[in-house]
Length: 206
Image (cartoon, rainbow, N blue to C red; front, side, top):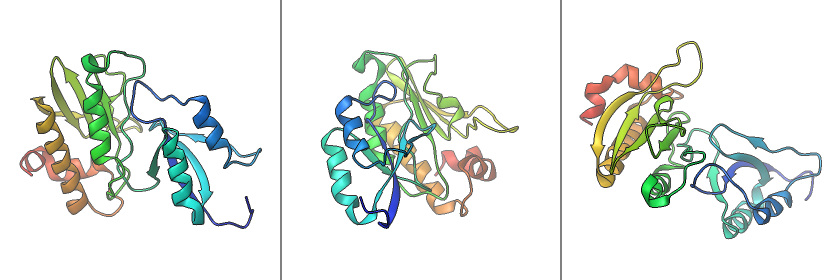
């Protein structure tokens, strides 16, 4: 790889599942595009940041996807969904719903980085209640939380916005929230500040 090639940063992970995992083939493909002294950055969004040549971006992303890696833009976008770390049982834990949420919303452009999280039970190991948008499965339905903040002196738990949602109701409400944030949020305004500014009443009725 030529040292003077312009590089861009992308985020990759092994897709949406139980925690963040990579297999040997995926690691080998990633390592092809790293110098031996380079390091990978592991983010709190269960993503790895890697720099690749801009003029080969499409081909490299296709190569990554062929081994099951998911690729996302870096910057002011909806991040890939953070999920439970250790639970099993795909149908029982609602993982198909988590995968659909990620498919629909990850990578959407927003005023500032937006973190979504999902957990399959009230233990909450996916940290949905301290994320911008959080989903918790309860029995066969889903509770939706918004406005959580996991860091800083003003950290706080998100508010339960809607409960006992069916999957399609959940997708529709998340879409409305993200669209509202995209349209009404100020440039580089974090979601929790946007949430505080417009209030629950307006967000529920968007």
